[in-house]
Length: 295
Ligand code: GDP
Image 1 (cartoon, rainbow, N blue to C red):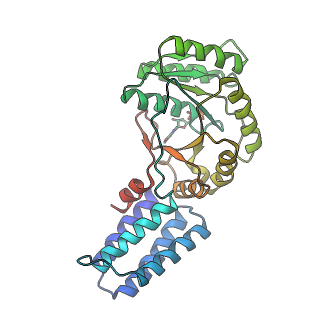
Image 2 (cartoon, rainbow, N blue to C red):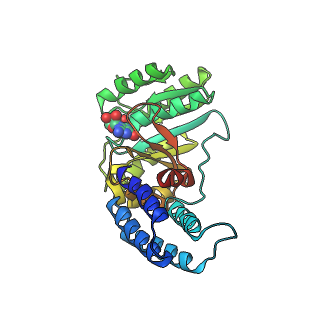
Image 3 (cartoon, helix red, strand yellow):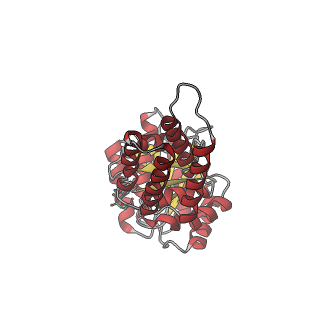
């Protein structure tokens, strides 16, 4: 997240600066605005955030033994955390097993890669994941997920000869359960583009009816930036068991836009993808995320 890393510099400039407090706050706020806008964060959100920071900075008194400067950074930290979802901490460990996770998203969003990343994540915690490919539209999808499953040594199921995703899903569910796995991850076809949320959601409902998932995960590519808002909002209101994974946060200047846009819908961002490799998946925790960019 190159642009957000600028924040680290703004913070250290602030802490080392010699200007009077009020002027330093004003300069900081201006730099913060510039940085967040460059990271594609929505203008309205940026103005709201900086208004809150300014007001709190001038009104609140730091507790004893804490300097005004340190207190100010704490305010910035609080407010930035709420921009990315605040105190919401996703529940990543399943409440029951077998636990069925179904992945949906636009083609190219990173769904298949994320399916394998999630399987690997749970495997590392001692669960027994199973991967299912129901994508019958893109012939390479089967081979791609099969290869990934071999890499991480996780059972895999699909049927490259079938053109019926619902039938595959049902048969493969039995296969996974019979093989004593307890987290079942279903990759689906993602043929629609962003802006066609309705088709995506309809497709999600059709497959969900057949497999009755415990969780539906929407995969969003961070490079769509603020456009993630509409998609996340509709998804969030369409499924009470939905969560979101934002992928490719390593490769775009729009990451701040996608993250803050999704957080603004109050949808739960569960994981973030930070690279092409399988271990490059993190549980998303807004406070930890901000803590890291503030250094
Ligand atoms: P799908 O069509 O949604 O299943 O997308 P894929 O899983 O095939 O991914 C599309 C491309 O995005 C591939 O080249 C992946 O390696 C890449 N990709 C997926 N997740 C990430 C990520 O978090 N970071 C980066 N840099 N690339 C990713």
